[in-house]
Amino acid sequence: MRFKKASALVTLATAVTLLAAGCSSSKNNTPSTGGSSSSTDNSGAQPASKIKPVTMTGDCAAYGKYGKYSGATVTMYASITDPEGGYLQQSWKQFETCTGITIQYTGDKEFETAIKTKVEGGNAPDIAIIPQPGLLQTFASAGKLKPASQAVTDEAKANWVKDWISYGSFDGVFFGAPMGANLKSLVWYSPKMFAKAGYSIPKTWDEMVALSDKIAATGQKPWCAGIESGTATGWTATDWMEEVMLRMYGPDVYDQWVQHKIPFNDQKVQDVLAAVGKIWKNPKYVNAGIGDVQSIATTAFAKAGLPIEKQKCWLHQQANFYGANWDKGYTIGPKSTDDIYAFYEPPMNTNFGNPIEGGGEFVGAFTDTAQVEAVQLYLASGEWATSRAKIHPGWISANQKVDKTVFTDPVDALSVGILTDPKATFRFDGSDAMPSAVGAGSFWSEMTKWIQGQSDKATLDNIEKSWPAS
Image 1: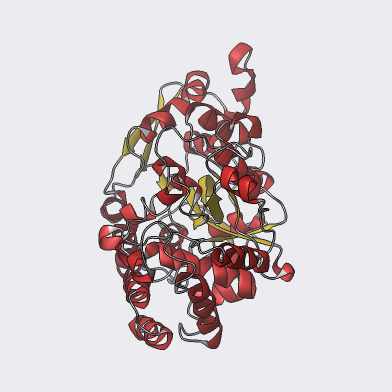
Image 2: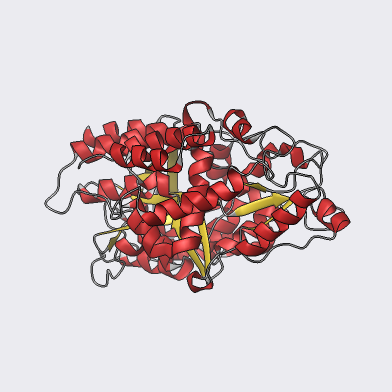
């Protein structure tokens, strides 16, 4: 699935808020947002495995560790609809054949709201593919979600870096292994244009700004951008804030900001907005091939990078899934003759390693049978991730054990390499983890007003005022 934040976040954030209001627990009922705030020291907290491995032969030899289940059915519910849902179901066909488990899959565009009704009504699926850690942790805090077995936990820890594991954990207990992923930390460009001009890929933020100045000195605008996205207009601007916060002040401050442990108009947040403004509000930098600074507010995010195709724009920051928006007829790749490619959005501070922002999915279970555990264990494996990638172009994973040779699309391969870099510091999309009134509300709308001319102070003060009291 190519993750398109604008299409689902309003309903998702609403579902998280409703769940938090409707569920109760003897534990803290406020979901953790992952990262440094979620303890992953769950030694001894995970239940023992119910799986009884068997010996299998031939094409099924590798599946004996999952056990054999005659006539068993596992229900699975997710937001992933066709055609992506069809790829997903193909990815576990051999597993079904060998184990005897039938995965009864339902993809629903209304998942984010419907799953709350199902769970509260006692009609939860065996497994849900949850596209946001806050939602997983809300179910966990309410005692609705089953802790992952020790076997699933060990498999996930072996295959994913600790930052990802933290987002599938709550209160020191691991609940759901990551699944798919997307990478926000990319800047798209034209290798052909760079080669002709003699430009090199910037390795630091300062080098990227210096390159922007060099391009601007020729009379050209280096950057193109757009935030129009219907009712979700403004979300691409929030991504810029998140990327810069992570690079300027690091993961700990990023987590404090997302959790409102520092106010939205804190000096650090002011610094971040000012740094974004040096690019986005610079009339010499934007909006290449489109218009002036304010045209960013009315340019559809799906079209914002297209001036690169016509060699009218040099740089466009957007996630790996933006690749679906390029017109046919343009070559994608790193060669000097290629039309379009991307590079890692460079760091600002070497103390924070290689910061990356993105999103993903998590596999949570509402029942704890052996066959459900077997499905969870398989979906946490590198074998499954490789199977999915082989049949689904455009799908990527941060699973360390995935066979990277199966990613034939150059940007997919680049993204997987960045996501699985052991030196990378990963953080989930910040606005996804904020309360809906902010993350899918005032943060979007106030950033739109900011592009249209509103001051930095008014923008941040208004978002701070909108933060729910509890």
